[in-house]
Length: 201
Image (cartoon, rainbow, N blue to C red; front, top):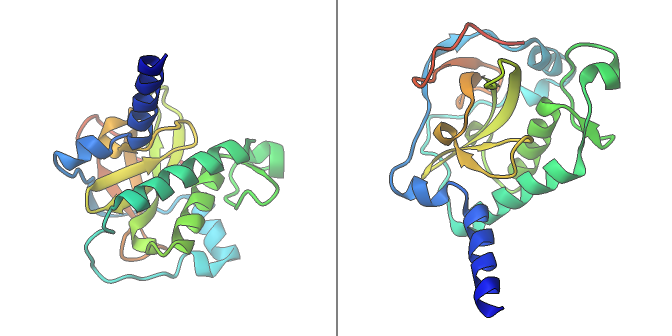
């Protein structure tokens, strides 16, 4: 029984650690290549709430990833994933695309991202290290995740996965994300692992 319990504890620790161990072998960062179009949902969010998109940060080194911060990132990712009910914008708002916080306890992928971003900023992480990111799933559908820039690489917080992985350990094709220097500007991503098409909504 003790051996089994010890094995289970080790397994849980390994799952919670996610990609942290592999990141120690060498940080991995996305390659970006210039300004691109802003998703319509984000553009409309900026119009409704300009404070969401007027954060400008100077060039900086990414946030130092400590064990304490890692635990907080994992906890926030898990808490938002389990406390928000998945509903589409059409189901909630009657429109194709509407980015908002899940204040009513429900939302789609962008809403999960915005809530995780807000909670991490409340911990003191800078907006420039918390980037809303648009990707394509293996089935071709568009998706939004949160990229967290750290000294040990860039990690993905995803409502479709309980794990926090480095960006290159996921199965997504990354298309574009917020600029780390200006939260209202979007930059294209050169994924390098697959051919990406122009953009998604």
